[in-house]
Image 1: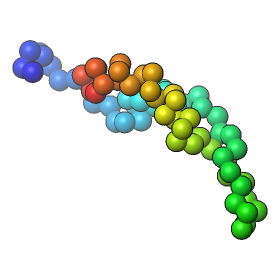
Image 2 (image 1 turned 135 degrees about the horizontal axis):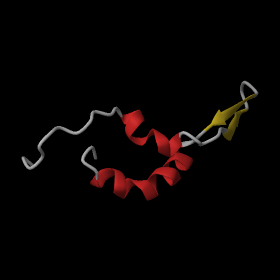
Image 3 (image 1 turned 180 degrees about the vertical axis):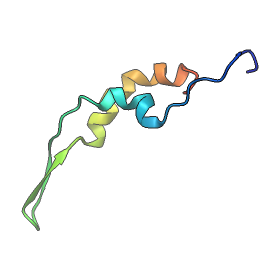
Image 4 (image 1 turned 90 degrees about the vertical axis):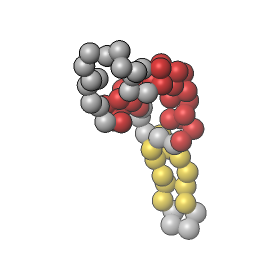
Length: 64
């Protein structure tokens, strides 16, 4: 733990993992039958599919 000669550079969560999600485009999620509105965006399953292969590398980094 004390083998570093300087602190690591600070990054917030968006800077740290944002590159994984930046290029994801919105797609149809669902329709609301009560209002007739359609919902578009990136759902949780698609984000999980993008994050899962990257998770080991992120967690093994000093910021992870």
